[in-house]
Length: 186
Image (cartoon, rainbow, N blue to C red; front, side, top):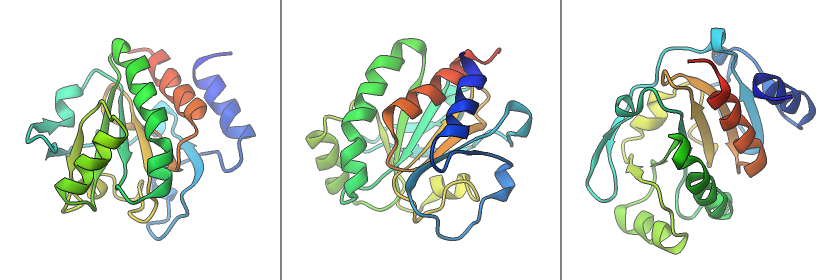
C-alpha cells in the first residue's frame, strides 16, 4: 500500500493521528504531542504565502518553491523536542533533497545568535527564517498554534497544507507524509 492509503492507515493507527477539515483546528493552545493531521487534496485551503529572511541574510519566498514539496519546521533553540528532532530533520533533508523536497525552518522566538548556534551545533543543512514577528505562524493561522513547538507542516506542490505534526516529529511518520505528497499526481 502506498500514497494516500498508507498515510490514512497511519493516521488511523497512530495515537493522535487524524484527518479533518483545516478549519476545525482550535486556535488556542494545543499540546505538541506528536499528533498529526492529514488533509485530502480536495480539503486543502489556499497556498501558504510567506516571505522572510534567513539567518544568513537571504530573502526567501515560499512562492519560489511552487511545484516542489516543502516541509516547514517551526522551532526555537531552547526547545528540548526541537533539539531532539534536529538530527532526524537533517537526515530527511539529505535523503529528500534529490527529489526536490525543500526543508525550511521557521524560528519565531530566537535572536540570530542563538538560532545560528543551534544550526551549527546540530549541523542543520537547510535554511531557517528569522521570524521575529511571527509572520510564518500568522501565515498558517488556525493550523499551527504558536504554543506547539516544534510543529512541522508538509506543503504540497501547490503550496497548500497537506499535513501537520504538532510536537516532535516521528521521523518515519514524517517520511510517510512526505512520500504521500510526492506520490500525488501533479
